[in-house]
Image 1 (cartoon, rainbow, N blue to C red):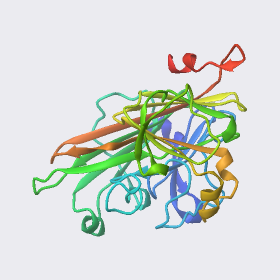
Image 2 (tube, one colour; image 1 turned 60 degrees about the vertical axis):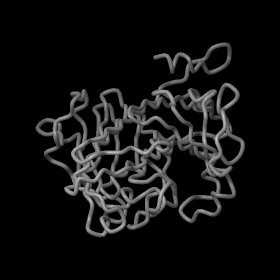
Image 3 (cartoon, rainbow, N blue to C red; image 1 turned 120 degrees about the horizontal axis):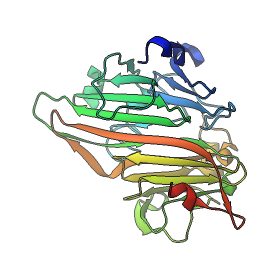
Length: 315
């Protein structure tokens, strides 16, 4: 945890329903909030105080229910890809602040961060019989970027490896889903969750939205852009160790079926999730995996009346 003159930048306080949360603040007023319940980032604001993540007005901050919106962490299982509950259990466990994490191989430019840790409980070991340490660093960069670094280590003493799937299930706040496009996933193969995970190849030059959408893009680039025409804002997602990208919007029928999601809220959110789903990650005892996500929000640039993603994706 940041110390000394940085103390004001990192504050532990009470959030909704008395749940503990950590607030990271940067000099220009940018901020990030992360709940110890689920190590769940629920807020990321720019220097104008605008919220960049979507959090449902109906989100239930009551364990064991997962929080709807923000950045849920899916581990050790993404969705129903396995025998565990949907998206695994990391998102509805109480994490601890890690005051003495092992050193990071890369020195972070940010001094505004919090380190959290999750180890399995006896109940967890009954449903997933593997010992692990999951360390998460949430950092707010000097330019307002949000960085999440996960380090997962196999601490089994029985010599057994384990495999897992993973996602940062990021809910982005958008002005109007029909005015949004996603760049960087063109011509890639994907699994369509609305068609029994059948494999297809993406056509066209950008992804746009006019109905329910639930696809897992495979072998994706390290950089993906989400262009919001109305806000003239582009989210840039940079990732490392996470080959897949899940794109999801529930649309109207599914939205109405979710008790913790407003009927019309699908219009103002889009999930683009850095993930490792198609090929599970396997760790032998003592081995560690690292998966990193960096999010930034930049003004969209125009070229011939169109948003020019090449300037974003090429930067």
